Image (cartoon, rainbow, N blue to C red; front, side, top):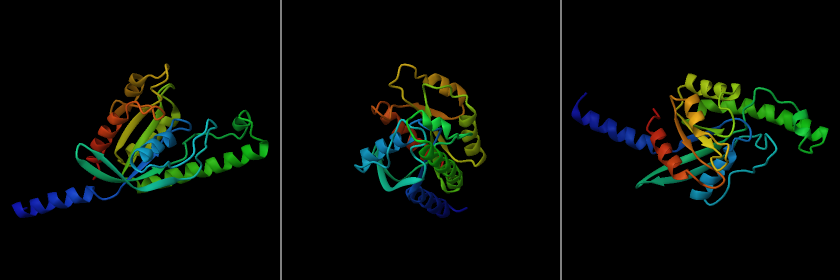
Length: 211
């Protein structure tokens, strides 16, 4: 390859990565995916992407925000933020009853949550990179977490793990790092904003892995 061709290729790759990056947020229910997506959209667009709730599977449909421009150290990238329903290996409508939902409402939520998981998996084919959001107060060695990360590894999708809820006493980021040592893990609190600058640093590093 000639020198001119190499220069053209570098310029092509440089501008190619500047195009809209489809960034998916995956993880188990109530880990804080929508809260983190909301924080990012509030920081750079001034509006939220979706509702949050203590009831599991509040997000049951894919929701996204386009043209989210994030700047860091003089660099600016365009993202399409894609918030996905929480991934679970089992959904039982009875689990929703303790939150005060009627049996009919609980059954409806369970059906919608199941369909949402199916859609989340389908959308993996369109992702340029994925942020896996985990609850840092819980055991990271769960079947759901391992399944999510395993699916992403099989598809060779660049991954950043956000260990959320570090504002809580039970949070243990080191345990999350120990569970997934091959990935970069950044501790954050989507609620308080703690660690969000480190998250943006890690996000820009993640983008470099996109082929």
